Image 1 (cartoon, rainbow, N blue to C red):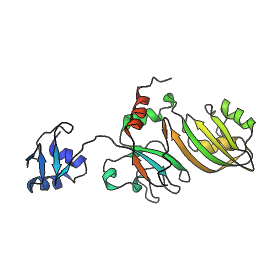
Image 2: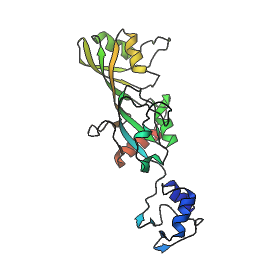
Image 3: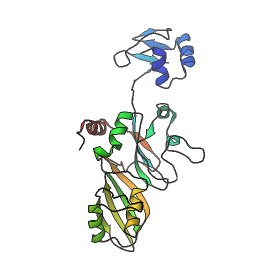
Image 4: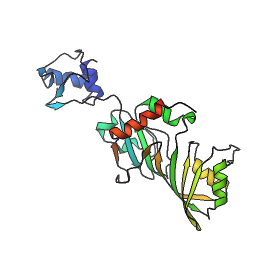
Length: 242
């Protein structure tokens, strides 16, 4: 990879700005000062330093965010704040995007990455990647609802959902539940409860596939995935489609 492209990709500035760093003698490769922007380097096998800082190259980035309410799952918007707006510049320059979406008023687990292949695998209906939600429901959730969800419910547009696993945590005028589904239709959790005459008043995603929300993450905060979390995600890509 060209040296100027490598450093630009890693957020050290535009190609023009990187050339200025090279001209000033601020960049060393394998212990030697270099000034050739077109120099080809192995980003994984050679040591590159900028202003004394080691450049640790990575092509993809994987971030777990504890999404807050009031922020939309998009990369840009003219009216609302987006989840990408919550990222620091060092992560934003990788151009990550949210994998799937959480509604503006929904909080919880959200994965952001620039790995399009992985995102496709996680969102593919054929992969049936489970997503688990915790919710407060206006209305008494019953075992009859559990049975209906297990068979799939018919939404207002006539679509029959795939089976969902509904667990009642508290049955009251405002019930508390956990629901696991393997689809991601628009407003699906809310629409499923509307189909049985109830209303979601609070919704939080707890997990997606093998990844659980890190509850130590404050709302609005994020972190890079651990190696173990990454390995479990990549395994989805190797899973045979059902």
